[in-house]
Structure formats: structure tokens, C-alpha cells
Length: 204
Length: 307
Image 1 (tube, rainbow over the protein chains, first blue to last red):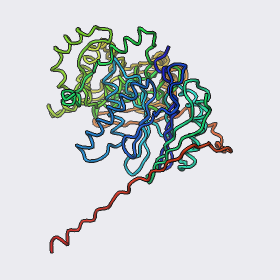
Image 2: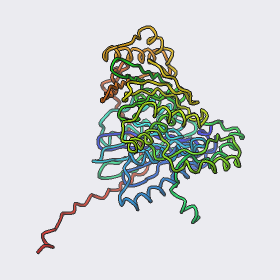
Image 3: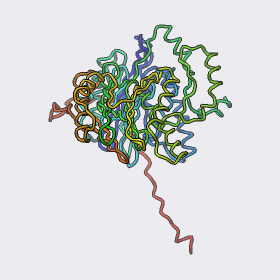
Image 4: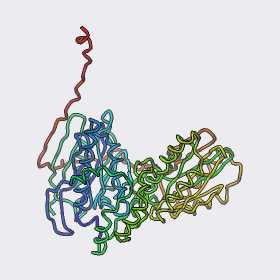
């Protein structure tokens, strides 16, 4: 039985024109039994930086608490928020520290950097960064997500179109995965506002 | 709790906190996760004026292509570059400029008391920056000279040997220093070879076939770049673990040229022009819009004070 398939998750982040979107499913399960249908997998680090954590839920929550701690220390020392590229390096270093006894988590990081340029990246469970210019995926539904995003993605979409595309990609992929689903949670971030939407999906 | 707060942030190095828990999970039947690997074809060759390194750009996670255009040629020093195959995190960490140092040599199956013994011996190593490109930079500041390829080689091989192959990075290291052009291969257990042309990774046999038939001493720059591209292409097309584009790095005395995506033999030509249009909109249950604070411009009001 795979460790990443214990709880089940689906995460995707996409880049648009001066905006980004990050989406996750909402199920928390213990193998085949569903425990919760409103489980949060995307966390806010600061207003323009979000991190989604897939994989083992307990490691995801612990890792999130550690990252928030480090970011708060950074804010106190530097008197400003962390840039997404810096944050990605921080997450990568924290994960690689546990190289021989890793956290069973795959993060997806999305943020607006300097001059509101969107930044997305994902990592494997030991911190190998993978920067992308279009989309990144993680979780048990990742294989379907790769396929759906590859075909549905267009460069330079605006916020409305980006929301529609990422929602369609997420819902169609989780429909093909038993371990994730029960709706979707989408954040679309532009330089002026953050829109958080809950999607209705199949409840099975 | 107070002690924990004082110990944070950690000084660096590998931490084995979760090893016991992970072992327990494995005993209960959980399979370990697979890491991002760079299946890879990486090559290097020495030509008349220097060294040419080449690599493909595919990163795999099991059978899935995770990254279609990743960078495998890593910077070590202005005159030294290194291509990496194996576990992606290991090649990035061992060549990159992380500020974490590595300590103990244990693997996760060693019992806890052993770890304590080892860490007592290696506490001094906590203070060194062990990641090689940072170490080379410090060495340059210390000596005031350009780095030599053999320095990078010794640092890499001793790091990899000390982890007994657990840091799974296979590297092709090349550069030009005062003593001339050099090309070396480094295996995950720490052994090295010095060669005029070298290939590593899952596509190494395909690339070596091209080199063995067409390599000769005293190649010009263009012939060398052409030969390296051919070798990488042979890896891309014949090896399943390698794919996408060709990256090349040409290093000569005093200058380097990093040709990212020098060749794109696998373009995506099948994209439909119409794109996707979704006739039925996604059903939204709840929407919450949070406006972001606007940046406040502070205008210098120096005049008022001066009066």
C-alpha cells in the first residue's frame, strides 16, 4: 500500500496573465473510507503566496506549521513578506534536510513575485524543485491532471478564463481518481484581489 | 518547549527525526515513495580550446514525465560546470548553493544509538558549508585564485563517498582552468574517471555509441557542438528516460557559453488552434473575494522640516 495513497489528494496550480490560480480537492480519507469532505489542503503564507500540500495529511499539517513559523521569523527579521522564489528555496531546503527520512508530502507553491509576476513550482518529497511556466500538479490524481492540464491550458489567460480552465481540469481529473474528489477549492489571485471559490463536484 | 524555540532555526545538515516513524510505516506495509529522477543522457567532451557539456531536459517520476524542460547543467564556478544524473534533489543539493551542511553518514536503517555516536564525531562538520559550489566560492575568496577542476572533483567525490552511495548523484564535471581543459565523471559511490569524452545516465550507451564512432582529438568548436548534439539526440530518441530538448555548455579559457535549449527536436505541433471552450460553466457553491491592500506611496516631505 503506497504512503501517498493513504489520504488521497489532488492539487494543481496554473499561471495566467499577471495572475495565478491554485486548486485542490476537498476529501480526506483513510484509504478507502472518507473521513472529511471539507479538508483544507491549500494554505496561505502571505497575501500573495499560497502553498498546497499533497500526500500524507499529518505530514502536510506539520510541514505547514513549520513553514508558517519560519515565515513569521523572516517577517520579523526582514520586515517584509518572503518572495515566492525564496520561499520555494526554503521549502526545498527543509525537505532535503530530511533526505533519509522524508516528509511524505509534495508541495505546490504559487505566488506573485516582483512586479506581480506569477510564480509556480512543485517539488517531490525530498525537495527537488520543478519550476514551470504553465502549470504544476501533485497528488494521487496527478497523472490525470497532467493530461487534462496539458490539453486545456492556454498561455496568457485572464482571471475568469483561468478559473474556468483550472476548475474543469481539476474536476475532470478527480472524477477519475477514487481517492480524491468531493468538490474543489480554488483560489485565483490577481494583483488587486484574491477570489476563493468552492466548487460543486461529484460526491463519490 | 522553550529549549525547542531556542534551537530553531536549525544549524543545518541532515536530520533523521522521521526515520523511526518511516521505518515503522514500512514494517506496517507502506511502500516508500519514489523520488524525482533525471533518467537522463549527459555527455562531455574535450575539444581544441576547452570543454563542451551536453544534457537532455526530461525529469521523470516513475514512468511519468514530471518536467519537460528541466536544467541539468549546473553552475559550479565561472569556469566549471557540472551535469547531473540520478535523484534530482541529490544532484541539485550537491552542486547547488544551499546554505545547509551535511553531517552524519548514517542510513535510515541504523539504530538510534548509532546515530548519536556518529553525530558526536561529526558535530564539527556542522559548521562547514558542504555544498560544493558554495565551498568553491569560499575557496576562491580564501586563495584569491580561479577554481581548479580537480578541486571541485575532490570536493564532490569526498562528499559522495562519505554518504556511501545513498546520495544518488552521477555527475559529469567539466571546466577550463590555468592547467588546461579537464573532464571527469563521478559515480554515486565516489569513484571518478578522467576522460577525453564521457557519457552518464540511462542514455549513456546510446550517446557513447555516437562518441566512439565520431570522436577525434582536436575538434573545432562547431564540430564539437554538433557531435555533442548528435550524442544527446541519440539518447533522446533511443532512451525512454531521456527526452525533450538539448542543452549545451561550451567552456573555454576565460569564457563560457550556456546554450539553453540549443536544439528543440520535439516541438509540440499538434495543439489545436481553437483551444478548449467550456459550454457548461463550473458550479460554484460559495465565493469569497478579499481585496488586497494597495501599496501606499510615501512622498518625502523634506521641505516642511527644513523650514
